[in-house]
Image (cartoon, rainbow, N blue to C red; front, side):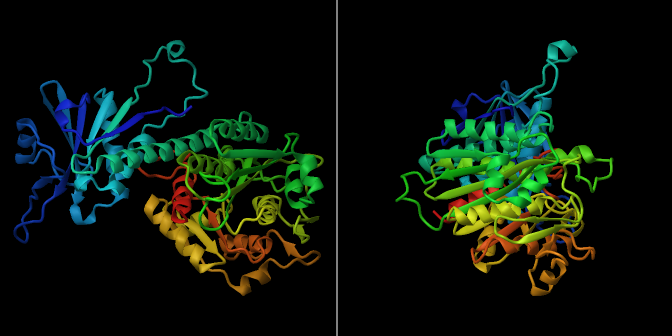
Length: 507
């Protein structure tokens, strides 16, 4: 399990806090004259700093340069000063990064309880970001580590409690903001736990068990699951073809949340969230190269994000109606595995030439998207580690967005900007449809012409949503090894925060 940090908020003065360390941000002041080499720092927020802190600022040991750190001690309490850069450049994302920098230093000095003095006069978006940056940076995956005593190591240190102090904020608003940020950040870390679990631990069946346990904990959330026979009964020949090479039972996981007040209270359209959850992708008969194949346990990242985002939305009791569809399976070579050249029939009735068994995610999603439509989804967003091409195009900075509807695309983009999980829209065009035309069937899943790989994958998926407004997020570059200070290596939980913000936009 991810390490849990207790999070709280206060508008009370610093004197009564039990924190052993106080973090204070410093903004770079404007240079009073052109060409002056030294910039002085201005403390961010209304906190009264002791003489020791003032001395660090006066001597420029504490600087406003972004993430520069300085430490002072005063009457048994530590003060950690962190540079925030110029105030004009300060954003919630920079607050997350600054929080991660502070967190790393707090572990070095043995902090148990940290109080952050919120900069920006208690700006609620910044308070949210401080919680997220700290809780995400505090994440450790130790499920398969031997017990510390048996290893002979000292137990790992973790931050135990975070207090967000904002004396200028409205107490009720601050408390609600910080509480909601804690829920979302913990959901991100829960998704990271799922992602980081190896494929012999997190099988499709284990993912079902996790989703069901989540539903038992959260009022208003329900989960159903169907296995191989259910896929075949539903005519999901594309999904079933991917699953047939593995002895593990596949799972079509359906999640429902009808809003905080029942079916009559939700606002906006029925939102469908669809996730690819290939718990291990060997490539099937079209076997992947050996190097880094171990990372293909992360091919279920879209499904993890959908499950945990819906869990967070239900915990927050947002008045929005959701249906979630997650397709979970392994993709393995065997005597019964789907073969290049095979033709399968999707639940939508379209036939698909499987020219490459390593383009399996779009086969799983084809049937899952159609299922979301049949369940009554009025807007659909899918998340998938679909193509390596998106990494070539966008690296890990942006996820790729392809959408059939401008309003939905704008809403997803705005949610990404607010959450810090930013997306970049790529085009759909009728010419791309020609690339996925089949020779022997309706469609082919992997055109021989290696053009516009990310867009072609989305063009394929567009055949299975009908007229329903739809957005596809290719998160192959963002799901792991994100490189952000609060999620540098391994699973990132990308998509959870974005999906929660998207749901909020309909409330």
